[in-house]
Length: 318
Image 1 (cartoon, rainbow, N blue to C red):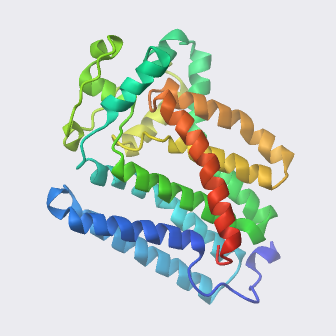
Image 2 (cartoon, rainbow, N blue to C red; image 1 turned 180 degrees about the vertical axis):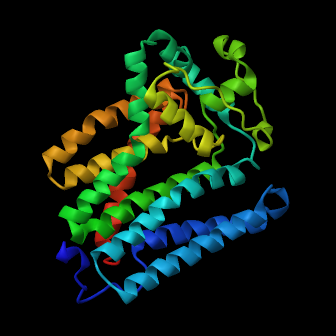
């Protein structure tokens, strides 16, 4: 315990790379806001949100500089991670000003598989136990992040900043994609065009429909299940018609698995593996993503991990 609060001999002076990753995303989207101001619905609140982000980042930096130790450094990580729940719906505020592209992705899905797996999966396997496993997998997303970063905090503290950089830089790159690639996923698009059209393989262009609509289909599965309700409550609290391609759930969880493998802790890796597999499958089962979203998430997750890990070695501030 003393090591956690021991004053560092050579504390980090400026922002960590993981904080710069979020700062870079903030500045990029700030430029987008300024250039699209008249098209946005809530530009003022978006600016205030960015002001609060900067204020929080500076405040945590000051706390660390006054008392530089592993705990105050970890607070900087936790602070940035906690803001992901704000940055995610913020992507919707930006990408809804662009024409929706779900008709293209649903068409590609139909051409690849001859059907819509997101529509048929839950119908084909509707047993309550399987449904709960799917929702358990989906709900394990943020706990997986906490477990991996906590492991680095306690067991590999010298690599915590690097691991945090890889995770947060990956998140920010996904969010950049989501801003400029407006795909909502089945749970929104299917409801917008009607399930009868989906069943017939007809996928019309809805244009700017999601500019003023955010209704979604209720998640399929066993509605009395504990994990079903956890997922539904999370969707009601923060879900928006955004961020479908590629699946950041699959992508970030892939990054987390690779980070766990880097630790060479077989216990950590094998403990996370079942949740990772369930999560990858559940994104389609609960109609959050098309299959092509999940596949793209897996491969981009691998690419982002190796890209940002390489960058962390190239630039010592990571």
